[in-house]
Length: 368
Image (tube, rainbow, N blue to C red):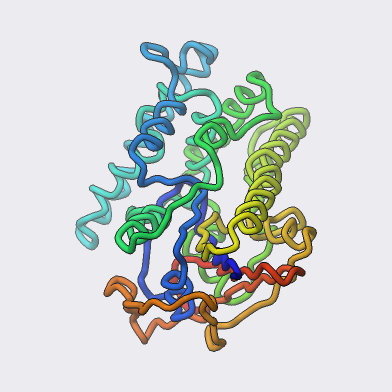
């Protein structure tokens, strides 16, 4: 029998995303045909979630003051207070038009940087990085990974993780503690600059969730979109030595968080498919892992897979060993007025024993 693999590209690791159930029939068919859901990590597993939360924090009674210079620690504390006030002030100024904004602002603060004093150095850095994004475009509905996991559970599909909790907890391998603290200091300096120039909520509008969806739908999305951070090139007061080191750290972070993980994911996908010929697999992996010379798809091609585009109007054939009837959940019913033109990547191995369908999916919230 021939195994099938259907990939979805979700937006961003561990970030929240608005789920709009205006999806292609091909997407619903692919999910229904599958008997196994493959995720980066199974966030429906309470034990795994507790481990992820625990590993991001310092040991009991420890705070960031244990590894940060007192001056830097106080700067972060002061900035967080200003950031929270600015966020709530922004929400209050628009509350007459959107009553939910005040609640959204408080939730956003807690989700992004709540309990920041308890975070390990690398996870404090990640929290600060998120403040360099277009925050006001950030939705607050559940992650796509969680939605798919719940749906797979309801349909009695097997759920597998492509990464371990240890790998998720320790994504940075090539940076020293000193380099991470430098990056924290540099990022705080940039955020302070944005606050002073009143640009904190105006940055990176071109890289918002909505912009990501639009570029994807228009066929303009490539690996350049997923560069880690571009704040190291911003016009704020930093010396050449500091800028050079910041760029070096950005490159190393991209290698750790994207490139090395892509190679590992591709290897494990190949292993799963080749050793389980009777499985029909639907995979949901971050969209950024599908682009660039070192993407998951690139590594699969190097292993002998041929990648072809299949559009929404094409036919997605079910596995030959499939005999059950399918019933689409009402949550998947789409609004015909917002019918998307979704790309589906079909991957075929150069082996008679393996077929894979790879569906790259992003939440559809804007039409090109």
